Length: 117
Image (cartoon, rainbow, N blue to C red; front, side, top):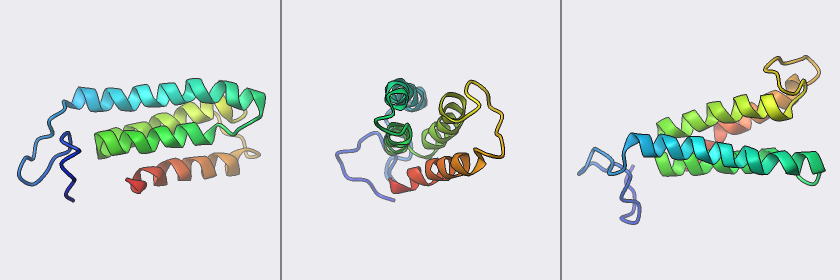
């Protein structure tokens, strides 16, 4: 896949190594998910907006900026942190049968989000 010249950090056939380091790309993925969680916590507690929107935006941004590896890291972090902070039982990674459908929809959305880039 070729990228426009405005995206110099992406690898191209002529330049197989990306300009930006892997640490920066993976760091942006981690920081974007952390920022999305920080934004989603007050939104979810006020019940004005669901927690999903900021997290999925962070996953898409991570995949767009960093590529596949950072995108999949963002997916894993989004699923884990989404379950831990927002899906009952809170502050646990255990999944009860009553919340399994909500978790599966969230996880499927997070897995499909990087394909938008």
